[in-house]
Length: 545
Image (cartoon, rainbow, N blue to C red; front, side):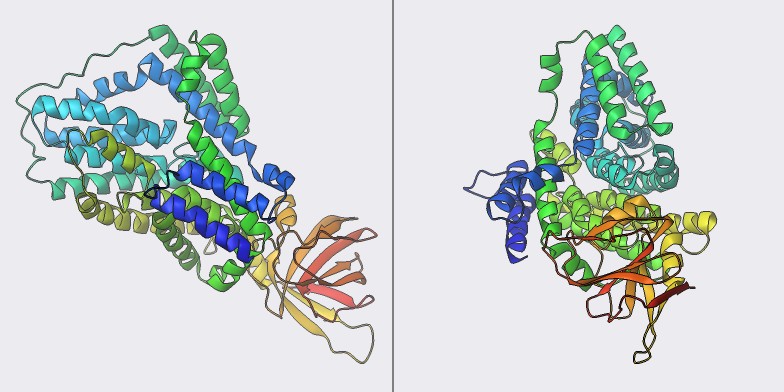
C-alpha cells in the first residue's frame, strides 16, 4: 500500500504540474511512468496491468477522434462557424452565438476539439471588427466545458463515466440537458457583466466575414450521415465503443481520404495518458489504498439525497482542480461504487467534474488550448480567467445539484438510490445453533443484487463497521466462488442455503491474497462481515427490513 501511495503521488505530481522544470515529462509520459513503476515494484503483474487498461474507453475515444478528423477535413466546423457567427450583428449577439454554438458542438464532438478549431476563428473575427477578443475566448472555453457536460461524448471524463456506468445516451442527455442550458445562460450573463464596456447592444460598424475556408461537400455529406448513424445507435443503446469504432471504420471505407492524413489528426498522447492512468489506478485499488481512503473519507450514503449529491459534487470539483478532471474521475470511481454505483451518483460526478473545469485556467485542457492558441495575439492571465470562471463554476454546480435532486425526487421519490435505500432498511439476524451463544443483528451496508455489483463486491467500498454486512442475494440458488480482490481489510465469508442455514464459513480472509473461497454447493445468499463475526456452520440466518 505504501509503495502504491508513493507511485500515486509521483504520478500526480507530473499530472498536476504538467511540466516539471528540467525534467521533460508531460502528463501522458507521467502517467506512463506511474504505470511502469506499478509493475516493476511488484504492485501489479504485467498481466494485471494489461487487464487494467479499459479498451472500451480507448476505442470510444479513438472512434470519436477519427470521426471528428473527417469532419474537420470536410470543413464542417468552419462552415458551422460561418453560418452561426455571421448572424451576429452586435457584440452581445456574438457572445450568445459563440456560447451556444461552441457548447452544442462540444456536446457532440468533444470540447477540446471545438476549442482547437474555434479559437483562431474568433481571433480573426475580433481582429476584423477591432473588438476585444478576451470575452469571446472566455465564452468559448467556459461554454465548451458546460456543453461537454451534457453527453457521454462531450469530453473524455464523460466517456469514462459512460463506460463505467452503462447509462443510456438519451438518459444521460435528458438528465444533464437542463444543467447545460442554465449553464449557458449563467456564462453569458457573467461574462457580459464582467466585460460590460466591451459587450454592448450597438451594431458592429463592419459586417463579419469568415477567413477563407474550403468545404469538401461529398466528404461532408458522408461524414454527417455517419455521425447521424452513430448518434442514432447511441440512442438505441448499442455499445458506445463498438458504435464509435464502426462509425470510424465506415468513414475510412467511404471517405476517400488517405488514412495517414486522418491518423495524423488523432491525439495519440491522450490515449497513452488514459492507458497509463488505468494501470496506476488499478494498482491503487489492488493495493487496498483506495479502500482505505474511502473508509476514512466518511459515508456519504448516510446523508440525505441532496447531501449525497452535494458532497460528491464538492469532492469532485475540488479534486478536478487539483489533478484535473480525467484523473479525478478515475480516482473517484471506487468512491462512487461504494455509494452503490447508482445512476445519480455517476451523473453528479459527470456534472461536477466537467463544470469544475471552469474554475481556474488550468482546470481543464479546453481552457489551456484556448489560452495557448491565443497567446500570440492576446494574453489571458490566471486572474483574468478566475474572475469569471469562479463565479460561473459556483453557480452552475449549485444549479446542477439542485436539478439532480429535483429530478431524483420526481423520478424516484426522495431517495436517489433505491438499492442504497433498501440496503439501509435491511437487517440480517444470526441465530446460533448452540445454546451458549447469543443472536446478533447486522445492518446491510451494501446490497449486491446485480451481476455488476456482485463482481465488484466490497472492492472500493469503505471498511465495514462491526455491526454491518454486505449481502449477495441470488435469484436462483447457485454454486459460487468468492475472492478478496482489492478489499483492504480481513473478512468472514458466509454461505447460506435457501432454508437460511449457514453451510460454510471462511474466517479471517486476508487482503492481498490470491486464495479463492468456493461455496461447495448451491447457495441462496452470501454474507460478508468483518473478520471475527463468530458465525458458525449450522447457524440460522433471517433477513428482514
